[in-house]
Image (cartoon, rainbow, N blue to C red; front, top):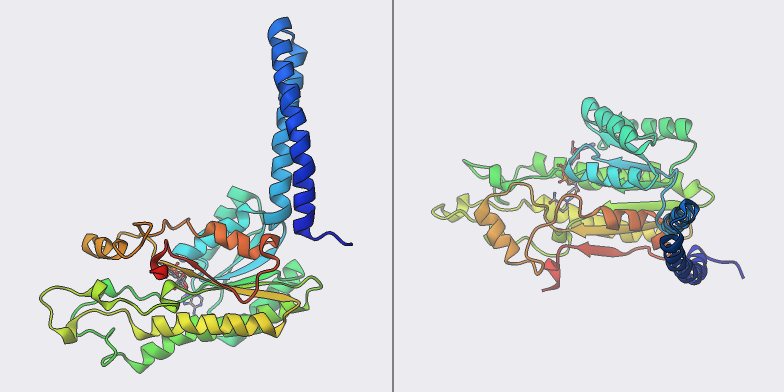
Length: 333
Ligand SMILES: NC(=O)c1ccc[n+]([C@@H]2O[C@H](COP(=O)([O-])OP(=O)(O)OC[C@H]3O[C@@H](n4cnc5c(N)ncnc54)[C@H](O)[C@@H]3O)[C@@H](O)[C@H]2O)c1
């Protein structure tokens, strides 16, 4: 029977464990001998054995969680979390293809990741609301790298309701149609267009690949509008989380399920629903929000890296159509 990657991992891990115990025993014995005889070669032997043990551990990690040479397209890569996703990919040996609206930030990010991780990170200016730009970029990436292994649909208009004042355009009754269309164009239509082009290319790979959609805890629950309330303001001026955020993030979960069954044996598609990230929000808001989170705090911006690597790698080889909540427990109450 053919070994799966997981089987191989356990077989290797099992035999490595036995070897590990023998080596620990021989190390202890060697330390005693080195101590008694004070011979330099004993210390050399000891160092080499320890290095061998550490290297073997690194190899096992690579088997399951490695993204070695995986070509991973990330939209909205120059934003707060896009940078973290890109760093996670590059840190696991993958090649992040960084897409965002402006040239300078993506080029700089690519240069930084290249220097830090020694991978061919590459930045492109692509507006994902324009199908022509996506199609052109997809062809460019294929020409340069030969294939695409994964797509992370991360770009979104991220309205920060705290910064709005005057007539409140975040409220449903004032919400401009143009804002509705612009938010859906990036978060939902953009994700569809990227799946259509990069996703189709992934499906044509002999070994397929992965699409990962970045939804939100607000794809699962309604926003608690009490969090945004300012004392003393009349109801019609109170700040709210805009309707488009809920619609886009819920829509991405539908897109995830559709894609998981569209190229079922080739493309695994999953979504994550992250909770809020601490980024200097007002103290009162933080106090209110954290009181609704069992872990008792918002996420650190680098705290989604683990789930990103897991979902892009062989470690999640039997996961598709899943919606993974990563929210400190907020939506379980
Ligand atoms: N920050 C959070 O607390 C949080 C929580 C849950 C989910 N999320 C989701 O995570 C993702 C990233 O969030 P973030 O905080 O890094 O947001 P961000 O605003 O910092 O980054 C979004 C990026 O998308 C880019 N973008 C916008 N329109 C684009 C377009 N048409 N084409 C290409 N790129 C475009 C922006 O230039 C920006 O760099 C979003 O989908 C967001 O909804 C964020």
